[in-house]
Length: 142
Image (cartoon, rainbow, N blue to C red; front, side, top):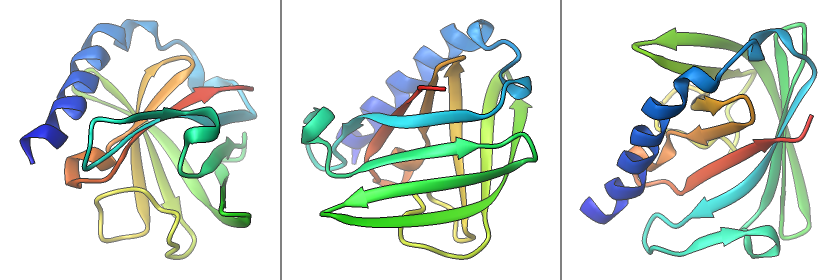
């Protein structure tokens, strides 16, 4: 359990140092965020590129809706919903609310929602490690 918290705590420390790097992200659309890096929930392995367990991206649209796409073992899964950005205690959060429950939601909440932390204009991290999920980092490609 403690081993799982170390990457999450390091991400939080990084976040505190990068909050000033977030500028006007809420006004730039469309935004595509591609899964770049994954850390294991049970081991210290870091996976990137073809070594990722799955490929996925978020597409944020100007109308406040999003599309999430995941490719896992040749199977594509899509999910949609709405999003908001929120500033909370010097953190910039991306809050995703899904239209329906789906297995591609990566988070700790019982509702069909996800929370990600915006570390900079081009880096998002998942909060899933807080409940033993993998650490996921997304890079902005658009």
